[in-house]
Each structure stands twice: as structure tokens, then as C-alpha cells.
Image (cartoon, rainbow, N blue to C red; front, top):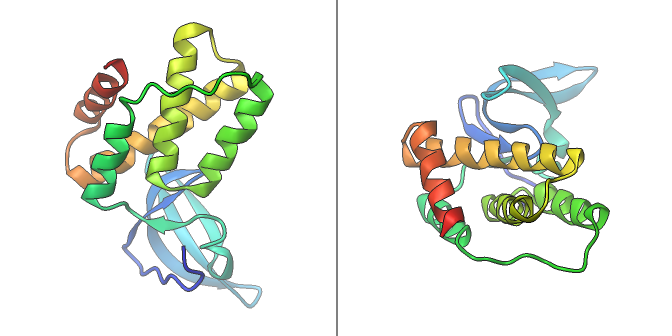
Length: 160
């Protein structure tokens, strides 16, 4: 992502560690500019320094083609073997920090498949829930369908 991405009030955005939301305002505090982002799922506002927005992963919503690519990747039965849960957690946290919808879909896919073999540890379960929530919210927003229909699409792909 370029470091000079500009966001405007009203833009729909994704803040990878928080979720889908929109830019509510641009504010100045202590001589620094901040984006105020309303996060839809948690019904909270987050202040993010404008100068760090890109490095913190703030991005516009994915395109429809990116959403379709991410959804189709959910059918791939790729699970990385040989990693303990801590290594998997670190790998998946890095994917979440990357913030692309495709990376988020990879986290959902791998943790969903792992959960079918063995119950996920608490930290991995939280990461899975967060990734799934972002995947559902962003897909719903981009495709213009409700979240329940989106969940059905996602789980249909995961179950293939």
C-alpha cells in the first residue's frame, strides 16, 4: 500500500485489527492529524494518526474481483502442518497485519480447517473470530448483501 493514500470523510475503510468502518472526521490533537473511524461491528470509534494510517494497514474496501478471489480461496484445503499453535498464531497475526482481504481469508481458511481437527486455543479462536468478522463485513459491504447470506456463502466455500 502506498504511504500517501488519502482517505476522505465518508470513505468506507478496513482497519485490519479492528474491522470495517468509515472515516467519520479528520481531527487535530496536539498538532497531529487523526482520522476518526467508526468501526461498524463493535460500534466504537478509533483515532488513527493520518501519518501512520497506511503503515497500520488502513485501506479502502476491496474490489468485487478481490472479494471473489478471496472467497474462492476458501475452498483450497491448505493447512500448514508441522507448526505448533504459537507458530501458527504468529503466522496468522502477520497475515492479519498485512490486512488484505485475501490474507484475512487465508487466516479464516487455515483456522477453520484446524478447528475441524482439534479445538483451537483461546488466542487462535479470538483471531479466527476477528478474521471471520472482517471477512463477513467487508464481503457484505462490497457485494451489497446481508451478513447472514454472506456467512452462508463463506461456509459453503469452506465446506467444499
